[in-house]
Amino acid sequence: MPSQKLPTVAIIGRANAGKSSLFNRLVGYQHAIVAREAGTTRDNVITKVNYKRYSDKDDPTGQFWLVDTAGLKDPDDEFEAQIQEQITEAADSADVIIVAVDSTEYPGDELRSVAKTALKSKKPVILAVNKADLKGSLDTDEFRRLGIRDIIRTSAEHASGIGELFDKLTELLPAAHSAEPDDIVRIALIGRPNVGKSTLFNRLAGKQQAIVANVAGTTRDLNRVRVGYHGKTIELIDTAGVRRSGRQERGIEKFSVLRTLQAIEEADICFLLMDVNELNVALDQKLAGMISDAGKGLVLTVSKWDSVMEKDAYTRDALAPRITRTFDFVPWAGLIFTSAETGQNVTKLYDLALDIMGRRAQAPKTRQLNDLLQKAISDHPPAGLKNTHPRLRYMVHTDTAPPWFVIYGSNLKFIHWSYKRYLERLVREKFDYSGTPIKFSFRDEKQIKANREKAAQQAAHKTETDSPA
Image 1 (tube, rainbow, N blue to C red):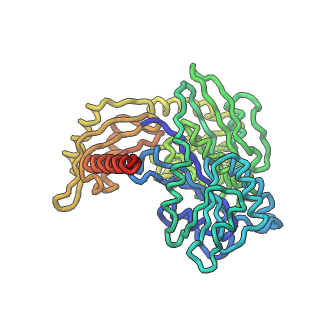
Image 2 (image 1 turned 90 degrees about the horizontal axis):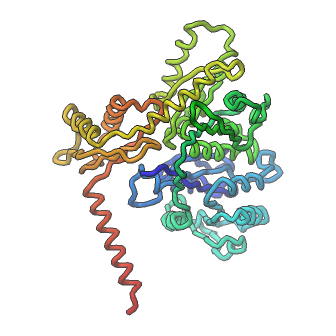
Image 3 (image 1 turned 45 degrees about the vertical axis):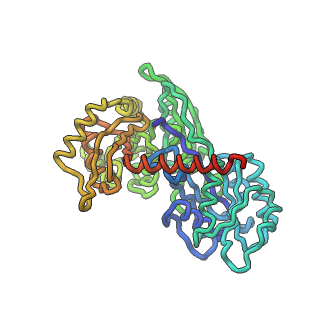
């Protein structure tokens, strides 16, 4: 299973056009705040969506990043003053753009301007005419003047048109991008504004490469530099900070989260920087979750250690367990305390990254994995229902970025999440995957056979209908 860079879909549109409801329908569960008050969604909401109906939910070839953006309001509103900049950023960052409109409102000049900007990007654009179930819904022809060719009438509330929208996305989305293999180790510096990313970037690079200022959010794009270390080429990627919910200010700031996501996708290892004077922030946890979901190595990097005036040998030992508890959903992540100002532990970051890369590159033998699996089953058989116990037959290692294991068997849908965690713990103990997430896929042999038969039937039916009478 090759390492993949997932495509991105951005939903844009006027406030209260039903974007968040549409987002939730595409995701499959309630994710964004939905309310009748216009402009409820004040920040981007990002999640992965599975769009191939019969694909494994863990298979990256059937997924994309879906981004819900804040709605457009009166351009005189300071919050929305740079809306064209926002749309431009969305166009630059996304692979497909969904413009959501309210089917009961006539398209005005503002919406025509948004559509024009989206189309100028040369990216595929879909017009989702939402709330199509409401009385007073306008005819589709009223929206053709916007110039968007692909128009789909939807009702997020009643799931109408969602299947058609998925089909169109499947058609338009580029294939998940496989990066060309090389020997470059890519490290991204991730975190909120003003946590010291650019200062650390400069210290690691050994020269003044990024703009450093006391103003939060100075870095607007991705800065890069390559350095040599112990015979390895390392590419450092610096990002603009991601503000906590409700504090993104204007368009370009709001889409810094998309650029951060791109940096995470490109990187092998992410250093998540956290200001020692402002720990345990919910957004830091969200970023750690994004890094883990993307399958990247993670080091929790406590910055500005020099600013702690009253510290002794026990200060770090007191803080470390507190941080570990906050990030208990990534117990495998590394943890280090640094100061870019004094250089404390900065070089160790390179050593940590190379160590994690070495562990990610392990290729356990199939025999070792199956000996481990059989012992796990013998010591603790998986629970199930009457006459439907899961049967785990064999396990194989399929990828290193991230380390990926596929287990084949039958009745695998009955495997409890705690048993999956049990298997992960055993694999980690055996092969030491500290610093990196590892992924598991469970392939039910009966389901695989059924899907193949269904695909063959569909292909045969298509051949019959396409053949001339």
